[in-house]
Amino acid sequence: MKWRGWVGGLVVACGVVPLALGQSGLDTPANAPRLSDMMTRIQVRHAKLWFAGQAQNWPLAAYELSQLKTALAEAAVLYTGIPVSNVTTMMTPIQAISDSIDAKDNKRFAKAVGDLTDGCNACHGSMERSFVMIRVPTENPFSNQVFRQSGKR
Ligand code: HEC
Image (cartoon, rainbow, N blue to C red; front, side, top):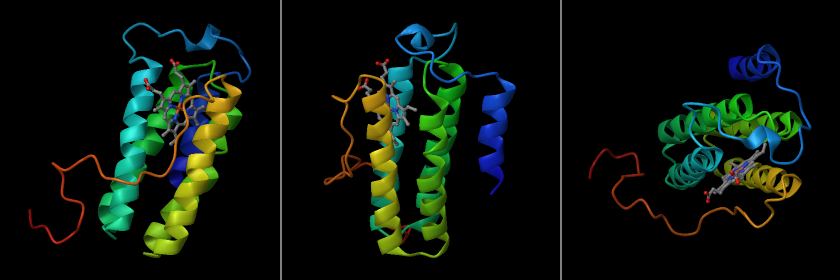
C-alpha cells in the first residue's frame, strides 16, 4: 500500500538514524509536540481503533488506523532517538489490521491489534519505558462518541 513507501521515504528523506540511544533524540524540537503527548494521542487511537473494530464499524476503524499510522510516522521523523526499526516493524501489524478491515474479519482484526500492541510494548522496552505497558482495552472510556455504525446517537 502507498503509506508503506511513504513512511520509509519520509524516514530516509529526513536522514533519521537509528540507535541514537539514551535521551538525546528524545529532546523536543522547537514547535513540536512532546513525544509523550504524541504517544498519548496514539494511545487514544489505539483504543478507538479497537472499539470501532468491536462494533464492526469498519469505516471508523480504517479512519483510526490511518490516524495512528500517521502519528507514529510523525513521531519517528521528529524524534530521532526512536529506533527506526521499532517503527518499521509496526508496519506489519498495521498492514494486517488494514487487510482485516478490508475483509471485515473480526478474528483477524483482533489478532492483528494484539500484534500491534506487542509492537508498542517492544519499543517501550527497548527505550527503557517498559513501565508503559499497553494492552487491548477492556472498557470504552469514550462515552461521548458513537462507535456502532447505525448513525444513531
Ligand atoms: C518506536 C518506538 C515506540 C513505539 C512503536 C510506540 N511507542 Fe509509545 N512511547 C515511546 C517512547 C520513547 C515513550 C516515552 C516518551 C517520553 O518519555 O517522553 C513512549 C510513551 C508512551 C506512552 C506514555 C505517554 C504518557 O505521557 O503517559 C503511551 C501511553 C504510549 N507510549 C503509547 C503507545 C502505543 C499505544 C503504541 C502502539 C500503538 C506505542 N506507544 C508505540 C516509544 C514508542
